[in-house]
Image 1 (cartoon, helix red, strand yellow):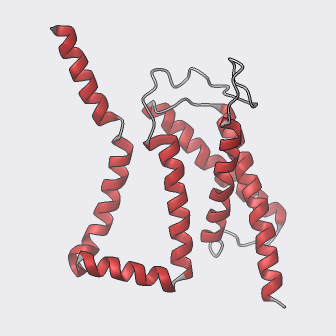
Image 2: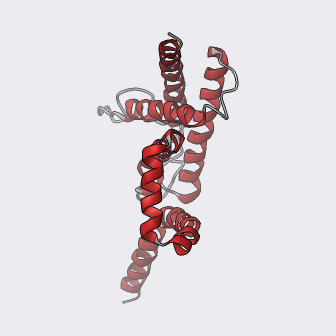
Image 3: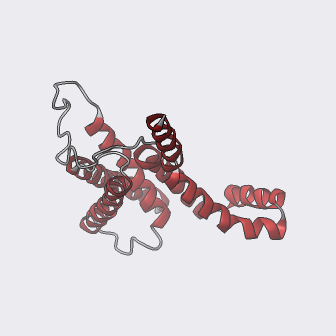
Length: 197
């Protein structure tokens, strides 16, 4: 009987603990939006947001960036099961095969996931963040942005025990961020060249 009660309590607490980060993020977002909706009504709020999405390029840039960032957070934090030991594999996976010799796409996923993140980040923040138009500066910013975001995810996984803290994830996410920075630089040069013709 005591064992069954312990299991029930444990399962109930786990059911609340697992979605905790998502619930906090959603609640904060709701509390930010609520005063505007209360003032003008939910229908008008959605109508104005859609109208702004259609007419404001900067608004769309931020939307796409937030949308993709939220997808990353769902994959890495919000939609993860609880891990008993988040430090069980600190080194991580560095190739296409894990320690057991099984094929894994973890490395490729980590790189690919951060390519669009960095492209969208620079596209959204180019007026504020990218003051210089030099390749080396953009690469330094790519390393900084992708490393800090990846480190934040890894530390959150460690603190909230949602996944494992892995140095390989940190490296490959940053590498993906640098590739995203290079792609952004090339696309920006092409667009600037076309606009100057």
